[in-house]
Image (tube, rainbow, N blue to C red; front, side, top):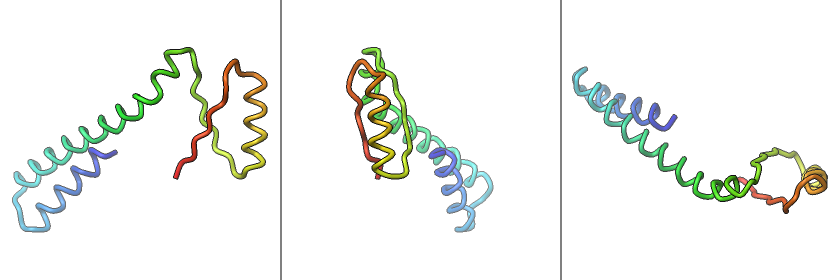
Length: 92
């Protein structure tokens, strides 16, 4: 997704300023390349935090809950069946 957004944005800028089709294609390719690098960086950053847990035999389970009551209930259920603790992370 970041690669697509960057490519489209770069192409739009070139076209809006009166650039040629070749310049628009070059800008789109460069923007796409930068977007791909950004996507890889984000993925690697996220993997760095998750990999040790998964290599240690952990299981990744993401649960989206609507309120604190459901959150407590989900934690209790998972904790009853887990060998180790349950980690909670808030997403802004």
